[in-house]
Amino acid sequence: MARSIISDIKRDHIHKLIAKGKRIDGRSWDEFRKVSIETNFGENAEGSARVRLGNTDVLVGVKMDLGTPFSDTPDKGVLTTTAELIPMASPSFEPGPPDENAIELARVVDRGIRESGMIDVKSLCVTEGEQVWICFLDIYVLDFDGNLFDASTLGAVAALKSAMVPASRHGRGDDYPLPTTCTPISCTAVQIENSLLLDPTLDEEKVAAARLTVTTDENGDIRAMQKGLKGSLTRDQITTIIETSQRLGNELRKLIG
Amino acid sequence: MIDENGLRLDGRKSNELRPIKIEAGVLKRADGSAYVEWGKNKVMAAVYGPRECHPRHLQDPAKGLVRCKYNMIAFSVSDRKRPGPDRRSVEISKIISEALEYVVFTEQFPRTSIDVYVEVLQANAGTRCAGLTAASVALADAGIPMRDIVPSVAVGKVNDTVVLDLNKEEDNFGQADVPMAIIPRTGEVLLLQMDGHMTYGELQQAFDMGFEAAQTIYDLQKDALKRRYAVEGAVDEEENGEEE
View: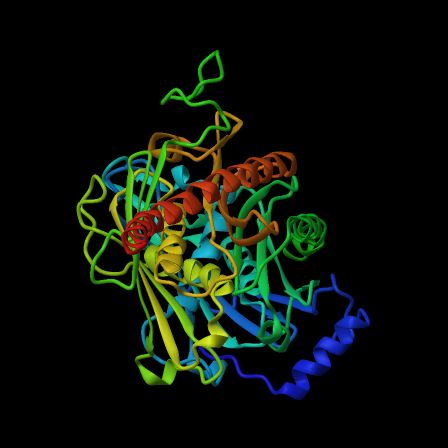
């Protein structure tokens, strides 16, 4: 990701296909790759999910602990999201603290979940000003073939929906499911030569000029957006991506239930 | 947060910007610089380069690298900000860098870096937009060949109303925030983020407001650059006059 190298011959191939309205793997412009979601991957996590989006493979876990609230939100639990682009997932990922790509990924996933109100943070308050549940959402990319934003958001939402609050471990009664309200879904598109492609593969991301991620809720309302890469988008392109995200979001939401 | 006359806490209408002052060429040492006062925001930007890119493994033999570092100084916010990069500033640096790289003719400067430093001296919501607005004036002030300059503005939502350019109070209690950067001449969007809750219609309204405001800010940016070079132009005219 730091320096995404792609051969000229493959770049030309992608461009020529796009000119004919086609993609390198035969999908239509607004077609997602095959999605599989496997929840409860790890038994030591409060909730977890492994998402495969084509060849992209992401593992997301939820851990919860009791802690003190932030002083400006004494009656609210805390959500913290971290992403690690571990070196096994791609030759371009390096060991060490999260770089700007990992930070952006974590913050965009966090924004969609936080702003949708999926987690009612007030329900995570134990004693106002003293003790609240802290919810750690950790994203690990195992295999990188593009579109980490959507794979990670799917994984994060599925992991949170499967999570059990570990009350018994802290002597606070029986464990109970983490209360969630809605199901935010993100859809990402890239712009290549003024064509839009949903759910880009790594090769498509390398060729892309601009990227836009849009997170919507079940009402079709917009909860988060993030534009990326060094190119531009027109307003019409942005509108098309938002409308497509609303439509595809409804389909992807069914996979989580 | 909006009174019966449709006015906001600071007396602005829903589509009204805070007062914006832009000055180009405010630092001696930097190759280019700009200072922006935007409501209560005070933001300074400096440009160094094109210069040899370090570390060298980041060099691109085909083009230059535009890299921005956005930073808030310790006493720019009410609770002291611990110095050094945090996750928020890393993300903002990345998206400002990407927006600026689009307008710079980087292919003219292979193996170099163009370093843009944005320092938020006083923060009152909308600092990334003020920072990007300042940074593109600083790049132009540095004489770096560019496609265009980039105005940036945020549109938000308070009391179920879409409003332009949130101030701190509105941002703290607002329902949504949509920072954007647009080249008014072409309508190209170079930066776009959103958090909060907006319907499709509200978001379209936000784009309408943002595009209109971008033109206003763009004119202020151009005016700042003209003023910066008008001073030198005036001196030249005098000298020419003496020669005659």
